[in-house]
Each structure stands twice: as C-alpha cells, then as structure tokens.
Length: 388
Ligand SMILES: *Cc1c(COP(=O)(O)O)cnc(C)c1O
Image 1 (cartoon, protein in one colour):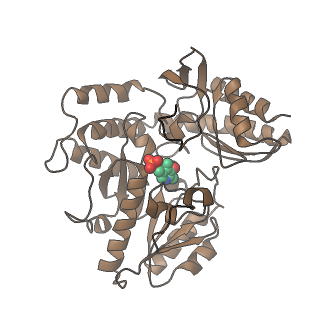
Image 2 (spheres, rainbow, N blue to C red):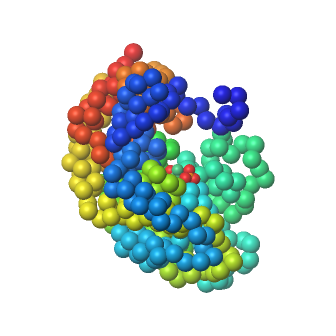
Image 3 (cartoon, rainbow, N blue to C red):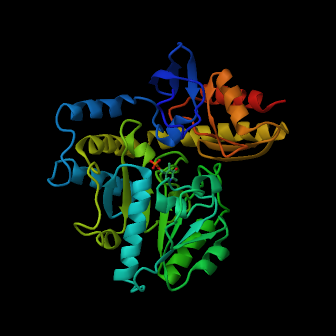
C-alpha cells in the first residue's frame, strides 16, 4: 500500500462484493453498511433497477461530450426538475463541481442582474459547513484540517454561525449575491438547525434580493424522508446542489437545479464539464429519479425513522454518549469516553460499518432499503461500541 496516496484513513476492511445493505469482505465476512458511501448508496448496493439501467446504457452509448446532443439529456433534466419542483438543471459529475457551479452562477447573476461591482461579490456561508474539497470550497471552510496549507484562499466568503438567522441576516450587505447552506449539516455530524431557521433565511434572502443556495448533496434524495430536506421546511431554494445518491452508487452524477433566470447566466463558453451529463450518468440519474418518484423509499424512511428515534433516545439515556441528533435515517452521535475512530472500529468488529466524522462524532446513514431488524442490529452494535 505504498503507492496509494494517504489522503484517507480507512477501516481495515477490504470489500469484495455487496448487495442491498450488506457488503462482504475479501475474507468472506459480511457487514451491514451503515455508511452507505456517505449517502451515495441511499438505494443500497447494486439496486436492480439502477444496475439494469446502467447495463442497458453501456451497450448503447456511454459518452458523447457536450459538443453534440444525446437523447437522454433533456429527459434527465426534465425528470430531476419535475421531481424537485425546479425549472432548470445543469449537469456535472461530483458534488464539489456542483457547488462550484452554483457559486459561479450566483456571482454571474450578481454582476449581471444585481449590478454588484465586478470582482466584489460575497457569499454568506455557515460555520461547520462541508461543501467539498476544491481550493475555492476549502476557502470558505471553518475546518482547520480541511483548509490549512492550501492557501492562498479564494476571497468573497463570510462565515456565520449555523442555525442563527439573525447573524446570517446581519452578514448580508450590498455585495452579497447568495447565502449557501446545508439544510442539515452532514459532515459536521448531522446538525439539524432550529425549527424555523430555513424559513427565516428564505425570507431574509427574499427581502435582500439575495439567492438562497441549498447544498442537498448529502441531505437530499430520500435520506430525511423527503425528496429534498428543504421540502420539510416548506421552502424552495433558488439553486439546489445534488450529487451522491443521484448517481445511484454506480457513477458520479451531480447537478445544480433551480431558477432558469439564474442558470441562464452560464452561457456557452463560460462553464462546462467533459463528462457532465454523459449518457451513462443520465441513464442512471433517470432511474434514480424514477425510484424516488415511486415514493417507496420515502415511505420506508417515514416508517423506520420513529424506530431509529426510539433507539437513539434509549442510547442517550444509557449515559454513554454526549448527544444524539436524528432526522430520517440519519444519525449523529457525539461519543463520550472513546474517540469516534475507536467506536467505528468496535462497530466493525460487531459486523457494522460506520465512520467517525471529526474526532468524537459517529455519523450513521444506513441505506434506505434497510429493514427494521437491521436497524436494531446497527443500534445494538453502536450501543455496545460506546459502552465502557
Ligand atoms: C459530499 C458532499 C459534497 C462533495 O461531494 P463530492 O462528490 O465528494 O465532491 C458537497 N456537499 C455536501 C453537503 C456533501 O456532503
């Protein structure tokens, strides 16, 4: 393992095969996968409908580049915009690219429409946020580990505390073109903002004529029981970034969906991606949209979330954890006596894959195809792992 760059510290498990919520390692040991590719595997490993869509497309056409058209681009855009109640879609590949795209679209809108003086646009972001790993995105990060050593940083970001609508409003001035937030902060440890926060931010953005960009790369597409987590707050962002589960755990697929008048600012030559919107990605993305349109996964989350909530409450009352946060099939647990790493290693020894985020937090995100019995298995392993 000396030729692989060391930018990850994985668990000592080598996966060879997977199906649904389960993975099997090269030694033949099975694990319940409660990380689910950081929610990229919301529908489980190798969902039959998604694999079938990918196979069929592999036999037809895989890549064209955007220099020409192909017959799945418009249907993909239509499927995802109608699913999310938005007007237009711009396809990319990774989450970070979708966020970069939203930043560019917002700045362009600010200069073209709001007449912000050139090169002075600001975007308000939240402390503890995670939006990806590019140099511009780490420039707005408050996480020293993600940021230190990668300067000089892209200017134009203002960081405010997450969950404080007043502080956010106070950071907006005439140079501000957008507010960029996660509706629930995933990497920060499943931080659910106070009731009414997103609605208040939406109102502030309306009043100040500032775009609201919601990053739903991890929170979207079923994880919290809704197609978008912003649905639960009854609001619609001007731009929403999607990724992770949009690729069905098969290929990287991301997109920005939102207001047509804003996305139209990215004219030919100003933005693009060689692989963005490729036929294979569109075929898988279309199949993902179809799965979500059926509502089956949302119903599963609605049925199972109370089970998870009850177990989370029981865990908190055990006194072995500091805090527990839950929404849908998403759980953040701040552990007490051990590090997050130790807890994830102990869970793995009990047949459950989970991963720490930061030093003392475990984030659990089982695939949405998980059964009630499997949820109990996950919580049993967690309870054992945090106990002294
Ligand atoms: C994972 C994630 C990203 C980055 O996605 P990549 O595909 O890893 O670039 C951006 N925003 C959020 C909220 C994420 O969870």
